[in-house]
Image (tube, rainbow, N blue to C red; front, side):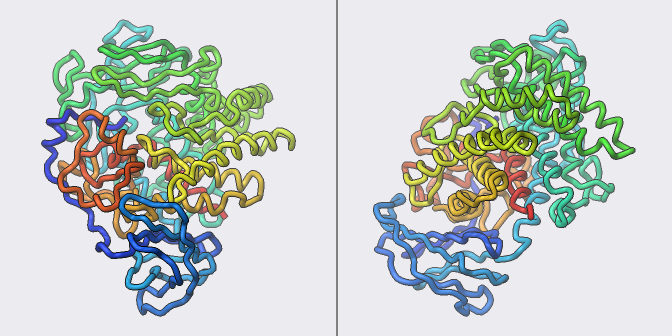
Length: 599
């Protein structure tokens, strides 16, 4: 969960080292800083304090030679902040490869590429952030952390009993670990590989540069599978017996100041830097401090857990060296799935002294995904029947089209189960699945008219995670139906993440020309080392920013010219609400980029 520091600790972070921003000009031009596939929509945007009209051009970055000229399209009635005039620049006709800029009068955009492999490097780039988030042995720091994990609460064992819960990933800037997010991230990493592994460009997208521990050196396995296995091994630890499941290590007592993972000093009652609590998933409200969750079951966790384990079986079942591990995963997936079936409902995250927690309320979508993957793994018709039943329960229920939701209320923001079930059901049921996806996409497209960038997500905490899910759902819908009904709409959502936004920055660390540099992340802040790949939370409404505890920014705000009451973003380590990278958001974006690489 976002690392929530006290106001005093947030101030102690220091003055932000701000990203270089485009020079202030009468006209601001934005486009994807990563680039475009040759046949894909290409939609830039211009905004200005003065009226916009006339022609724009696309020029070669090296020579300045114009290769395309077209008329811009003013967006009547649309404004952003102090900019009263906005226009869209459609240069989809540009298909030749190369590096280019948009030009309008004296204004020019940052460089972008047009190439058939323009997204190929991104999935592996995002893995760099995930390796840095590892708990146990951390390859980025080249050391171990959190060996004293953990002592139980709420479980069948006496409270305070030690179990081995080392491993997995730290959730965000903080050092908590959640099955709620890690199960989803692991399943999405595995799905990314499952979708691409038989594609001709699989090796170009997912390389082999590190070993099992995440250290440099090939090990004969794509790095994405090394990372997924890191998640799987932790998930297996959280299920030590057929009827047992743990779901969270640590709570917001973690938020006791900036430190490296190896220098833990949080106190959970066993002394500073000693054992941390691990919570058992009992399907009931939990909380050892002031706040209680509103848990009702374990099916949300169980469904995603089962999906991850069944995908692991599908990937490794025919590998002689890993077939035994594959069988172990399948057995664990089936056992945990049965726990979810017996306790339908949600196990939410736990907080201690602050009101913020992962407040998920949906679970049928997760059980659908788990059942679908178990059917694909075993061909047991009982799982197919379950998946269809859960699909009906889930329908099109989603955050999509809503102006506000609870924090992670509709997690994991995308019902992957509809997509995975689609290939194994009859035509009539396929139409229902397509229709449920389409309902959500239509709601988002309707909401997109409220801002000039055509964004279909609410500007709430983790808006970038919503965007990655929305893009993926649109891409899945196109593959399911064979129709590009949402192609331009999805292009606007995708390109917002890589520079087509008011602030002129990508939302991924170290990706693009201008990217977040002063993120809310303890490891980079304390070491001063650069890191690539993390997806930051993304812009929130100004009212949300002002309401959160302990959030602030350095003054003056270098991005003040581009803020709007609808959405603010700050490349500032003191702003955990917009500029904190998260493990699960990054994994979701990795799946998005993987799907964009499908042929």
